[in-house]
Image (cartoon, rainbow, N blue to C red; front, side, top):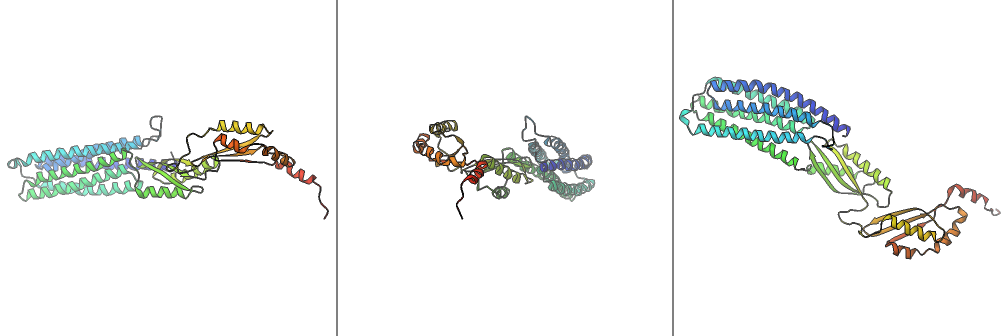
Length: 400
């Protein structure tokens, strides 16, 4: 795991624990007060909001568990780490909210079918609803600030969950106020509205998490930024098949880079590693796999019937050996245009170049090229530079 990603993960876990413990403490107090006062004051809306706070407590514990496991190092079962634990937790939170919301709607609907049995609401219910409203709004602002600072989707979802609590508390307060004014059906209507809001928020969180679990890609802006990083790498001619998939709050990146087809393998690898380092510098990237292409293989590929290196090397060595020559290197270029073969002979002393040129002239290179099925066949000489200077010094010099 890159060091910048590891540092972010540690900070996210710290912030998640701190903000979640604050939420747990506040929700425990509010839930107890809401349910007790709601029952005593005959406010279904306040009791429903208390049940909502209970759901918040459960979701807070889910966040703690997911936060603990998501920071675990990669292992044999999870080669890319455990970041998706957060996404699974968000999906669970969504399902929990939907269940709670539907339950509230059902209960409110039952009360509305029997308006005569709706009791009068006590003033204490309104006071509690206002206190809860202010508390939940404050909790939302605190949690959202911390979640955005560490860029955690799970913590942002939990923060907006707190905002939905504040919104539902506002509806509850208005319903209780209307009931106190003599319109008793407003209290169960407020409970129904709270149920709908909770269910809707749960659907949004659940659907978003499901998309991430289905390998959703980064947005177009983030993808364009990654492409620019790759294209700015020296030696990269083009980028194609750039793909991303979400991994918790991070992303995995796959890309094909186009390089000069005639460079060495080691140079192509160096360019790929440089490009990968640039991509990993993006705080959104967990890991990147960079594939090197001599050509855009989405458009053109080498023919599949070209001979392998072993066969080519054997044919070249046989043809050269018949004239007393030896190949030092045989470089092959498998391109969509065909096979190109570059042969470099063993280094020779400067004085032997002329005789070796005569030997090479007796090699039927055209026949060899046809036998190999090659588009090009180039054979070059190499000079032993360690002896070239001595031979030149021994050559007679002309008079001035």
